[in-house]
Image 1 (cartoon, rainbow, N blue to C red):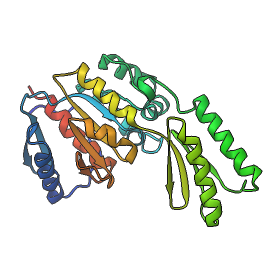
Image 2: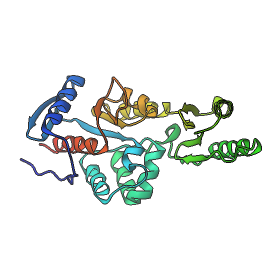
Image 3: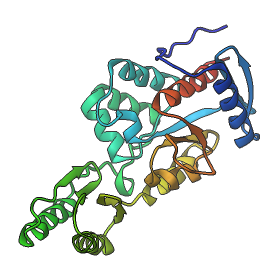
Image 4: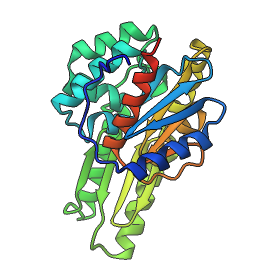
Length: 274
């Protein structure tokens, strides 16, 4: 049996969980995969024997909140030699540049044969002029009303205002202001208990996947995501993984990043078979 060149990572799935995952994969994608299990290893085979080609990785998952461990850096480097990867979010691009190093970015870019896609299909940073203006406007809005104690948390793709322990009137006012900022821009207002977020909308990820599928028509496009902003991307992928309880009927559920990385190891192994 060929040796696996992908570095193994700690993995905690019990055998029955592996069987459940394999069954779910098979049910979700009967036209793409047939699955055999042997102990705690799952082998996934493409009907065309070319399962992997283009892989879209969500930034949060790639960086685990912005901090890649050495083992994950090694994993991404090795993964890149098995099949092309496309990073289509500015979030993931930023994490790779900051944590994995420009050598990984350069390798991924050259191996892909496509541009690294970000916001609006171009490499971009979350620190856009619009974002900076919105952030400044939000801070001024809070300060002028004497609500400076409300904290504005800067995020990679937007900002969040901490609204814990405020009156309903303040909550409504801040939600209204964030909604106003989002109404004529590429942002989405997301009121949640205790916070209100202004986040970049994610339809671009779905558009980027369409581009990838056209450019690699003979390959299966794989996507992974852990938040609602990833849903357009997951719905368009040939094989999608929803991580950490994200509800998506088009995707296979995996418990967390460690489980996802292990699944990718299985996929990379099958891609290396003759």
